[in-house]
Each structure stands twice: as C-alpha cells, then as structure tokens.
Length: 328
Image (tube, rainbow, N blue to C red; front, side):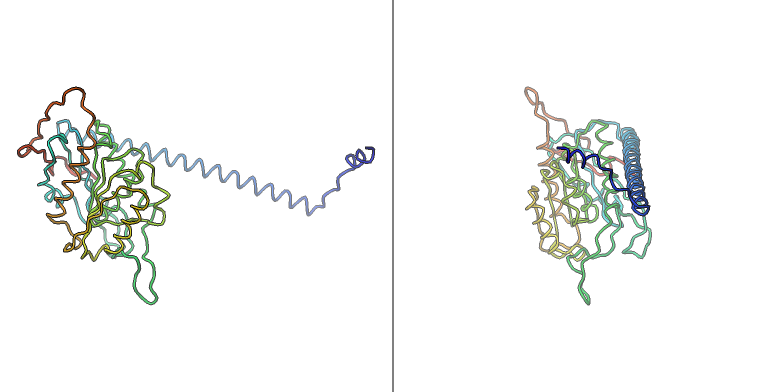
C-alpha cells in the first residue's frame, strides 16, 4: 500500500518545450474548428430561416393575387409545370379540353412560369428553365471514346426549384386547399421537378403526373425521399420514340421507383416521341380525376350534389386553362 501511495504521489514528468508547443497548437486548432463549426451552423440556420420567411411572403403575395384574379372559392387544384424553354401558354391551350368528374369540385389550374437563366445546352442563351441541364439527351451513357456517364444536374439548383413550387403550394394552402387536394403535373423538365417535389413532400399530394420526365440528380434521390412522398401515387407517361429522354433510361428509372415501394403507374406509348398527344391527355385526365376523387373528404350525413364550375360541360367539371394568370 505504501508503495502504491508513493507511486501516486510521484511527480509527473515535465513536458519539453516542443511538446508543450505541440499541445498548445492542438488546443488552438480544436478551438478554431469548434468556432468554425458553430459559425457554419449559425449561418445555415439563418439561411434556412431567410428561405422560409421568403417562401411565406411569396406564398401570401401569390395567394392574394390569385384570390383577386379568380374571385371564387375552389375545392382542389392542379399545378402544371412546363418544360425547358417553354412557357405556360401552350399548355393552357392543350389542357383546355380536360374534363374532370363533377364530384371533384371546383378545380383551379395553376401555371407557374420558370425563371429565365443561362442554359448550358443552348450555349448559355437566356432560357426559361426550372434548373440548368448540362447536356441533352437525358441518357444512361454518353457514347464516345471512351463512353462516359451523363453529367447530372446541380443538386442546389434542383433544391431551389423545389422551393419555388413549395411556395406555390403554400399559397394554395393559404386559400384553404390542402396538398391532399392538389395534383402536381408537368412535362419534360417540369415532370422531373414534379417527381422531386412530390417525393420530398412532408404532407402528401393527391398525386403526381410526369410526361416525358426523368429523375434529376438520381445519385441523391434516396436521401431526399420522405415516407409521405414514398406513398404518393404517380403517373409516368413516356414515348417509345423519345429522343430527348431515352426510353430505356425512363423504364429503368420507373423500375427503380417501383422497387422502392412508390405506387407508380408507368405508361409507354409506342408511337410517341418527346411530345404530348390526345392519347396521353386521356390517360392524364383519368388519373387526375381518380386522384382528386380519392382525396375528397368524407361527407357528413347525406352527400349533397356539387354544382359544376363555370364552363362545365354536361355532368362534368373541367378545370379550365386560363382560370388563373401565370405567376412567376
């Protein structure tokens, strides 16, 4: 016992000047790293707060504008996203003939317009686009010597595009339309953005429609899918003759989504290229009607018949293009 006490009381060896200096340097670096991490965390918190505040402000502004423009209450909505280099105008005309079941209620069609930015595939020409595409066609492998993978989209740009659409959704929520009564649809790049927005949702949409779309940033897809998004019904329409978004890649991507447990309907149209025709329109119309019908709240007591919207034909309620002005 005396020997153990003597060992405990024995003085520790003094560190050399070099060892003290090294120890001090390690402490200094650790302190600098701690401060840097705290500063980065605080900067990220402030950035997210600023984004949220801006989204809420934009949503309230858009909701006010839509209310003033339409002047009537609606029961559900379809948000349609145009493709690369397009605007909403052509789609308003194409969707003019869509007729939805009367029981879906009064439908508002919303036509956001993508921002104008330099496009890599157009020699940096200013183009309407939700995010920048580095190269077309959208394919599995770019043939060359040697073959190489296609350059994917910038995740930060896709994130920003998703936030834009969330602001539109929030604006509809301000008016009393929950995501469960909202269909998201789009073509080409718009379809790619539909998929990202639906799969990342914290509250389920009524459904999503993709026409000639693809999975943007496929490498990080599994990291952003929510449980809600994974259980949202999707329709993917694609042309077998599509030279812009490779049909084989579309099929593989659809298989990947299905194997992930996502309820996806994949429809391949043998004679269709990178386009939208009456056959696709009928499939899209049926899907939208089914999903908006499925999202109806349970009636209290006896269900009263719904009145058709202005411009309805017969016993059906069309969501007419042009109901709402395009909003940027």
